[in-house]
Length: 269
Image 1: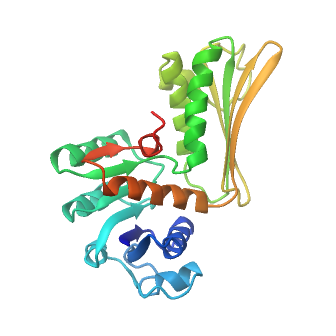
Image 2: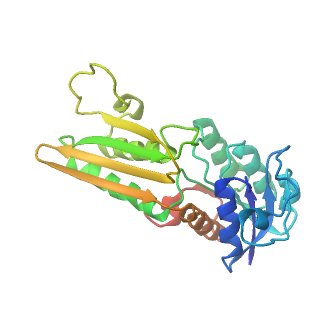
């Protein structure tokens, strides 16, 4: 059994991570962390997740949580993931990051942690096995179909999601740009309004929808004269992300130092 610490344990994703760990048979909950001042600090993480007493109280100190036999940290929260990764690496723990809003500076810092400090890190916009297969299929379609096929990306999430477009939608756009050797900043058009004129061939339309309790829907549309190909993934439960995160933990337990993504974990590269 391998000890895992969850950062953001009281959030929607954090609670599902706790539940999946307790149900896994391979892992145990070594710690649960929330921000200072959270009303959930001091509560049993398992009871809060609705899966019975875990014997692990939520704390505001990652350092404290790491002291209870942890081998890995999973962080889907929106706090400072780089600081959390530094603490995890210093404690010789693997680090799995599912936060969607990582900046280029964040990724550079994580890379330095892997190179200079021996960190074992997986950082991915989406931990789902299905979504990561979608990345691969979109890459193949974008390269095979060519410029005659216009590309539009549509994503929908719940009404509490803070960022738009989603990190997964951005990654899908990056995959298309890499396949077609386009510049993402130049190619992507976030929504359309007014008299926008004829659609350029080298453009990706990006559309973010928000409403209700949608976990996450993503569709990439390739349209040409006379036909249209749509590649879609729809998430109905956050458990798919939790299961992917635990696959990433398993991968890192035996991996050399490095900054990885889910394509590495799933051997899709």
